[in-house]
Length: 117
Image (tube, rainbow, N blue to C red):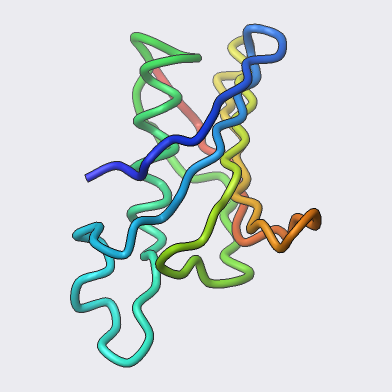
């Protein structure tokens, strides 16, 4: 189950920004966790790969995680910006999720994923 897109911007063909809203009804929040639901890291990575494969790197697939940092939780009803940058020559996809707090943006997670054909 994917989040709801609010808007998207594609800068050069190798960069994509998508503003998402995290609907509390997303299946990822169910049972993770009872007291304070949060978006699991595996869901964040699933969305990164979904958008990368569809928009930036068709024909490429996941190979390995180079570096991932989960710095702040993503909670139901939050608005976040997912930024993807694709370096085809290196087979490297970088991503970040930024939490919206009014006009401010704060990094929730980021990382690098190696892709292969």
